[in-house]
Length: 350
Image (tube, rainbow, N blue to C red):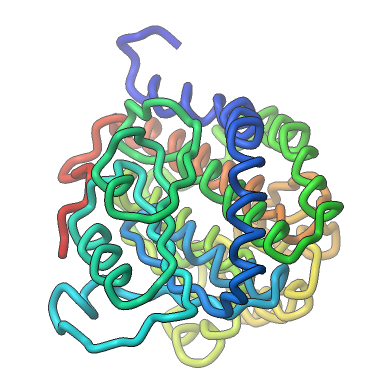
């Protein structure tokens, strides 16, 4: 793609994700193992996750991965607990994990600084060496995605998922489970090979103004991140929902032909997502289904088949479908996704 073409940077960075994950694992695994050993030794039991934007969606992955893989309760909390409300919390025996691509988000920094003074173990996950967050957190883990020049974050998101997955596995002392992640490059390669198909499918939605995006459990973060990319890159108004929550009220908004993106990989959440697709079909929704499971895919007007993999890795591959769909939908709409209007990095909201 020539340098002058819209979306060149975003596409380049989407394609770099397998190598970025490989580099991150090579550089950080020993540090993750060391930090995990300390968490086990000190019997840390709870995780508070602090982030904004795309990093907040990575935190949502950790909200599920830490309990499911490591047996540790994890909660995504708003920085405003300290920055606005100055809540008095005892955070001893808690890990406070701040995720910030730039390492400069003021709300995350202030929360981390106050948490450390209240007895928390603090760890920063960032893509930026020598950023301010590295001086605030007691411990630092890096995503080795290199500079992200496009406005929308892509490779910093999936490299963050990789670090969070490995931290959960090694905290649990499950080395064999941690080793499974080395299949990621192959799975992502298969998804990247779908680019032409995704680009063709996206053209159908060039006049789309709103949509629903749904996932459940470990894949809820994929719904959130895809919705964010559609909003940033395509100026669509998306609504992201947990699949089961959608059935308890928001489904009333569905009209015949309403576009609904449904992330439904094989695993524990598949049955409930299958029931959701039945309910959407009854209302005449236009479902865009991203799955590895044929019986689920067959219920979609648009079917995007991803490779079969363990459920905990589905968010790595499925989100690439979302990234590519947003990229090419933006191009069909004659929008340059490299330069979304109003996008600011880092996030300066307190």
